[in-house]
Image (tube, rainbow, N blue to C red):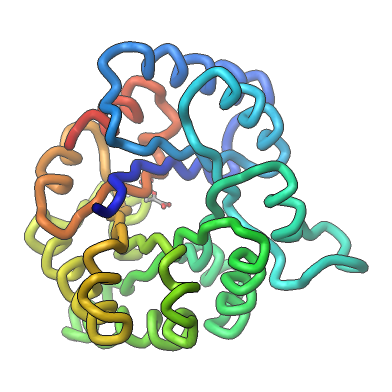
Length: 252
Ligand code: PEP
């Protein structure tokens, strides 16, 4: 059975004090009727990872990083390696987010290197794919998603791919308040699963969690998560409010 996952991407937000408060509030929210079968993942900025791991001693959430270096280690000023993340017992790391692709020019080649680094050190990539608005309007969204998967991920062996979590994040829905409709999300999620099945077999496809991301919030999560191939969410803005984040996680 594939996992149901709700992951919060804090992006470049929060002071140390606010991060501490938010983690505390999330912990409190998890004390009341939190579903046992939902994995809650928090992806704070690097500088708050240790704070989050301290909280995770008491509270049952998992922790992810938002980025990792494509290099193994050494003279790369300002970078954080997969080995470092692994040494902090992190579970996940986001790779291929559209903001990294757009603002930091991350190519498919770099993304593959990052995925390989993470897999080598036992950290699970949450790999994001998604089309721009003009791609969708031109009817190219299937083609774009397919090539993003093929170029960066489908060189992995089956045992490597078994550690990947996928996230469909239409770029036009990220931080815009425009959510994909449940039908649009289901259509692409089913398409992604069919591509995984064609490459790695039906069993692997059924085991792969595919999250939806893009203006998912406490109001629309239920309908999105009710779709057969939507296994949870990658949440940006709404992950910065404990009540909203917890209520999204309770939306299955
Ligand atoms: C994201 O950045 O991964 C995201 C889904 O953001 P938001 O929920 O704010 O659209």
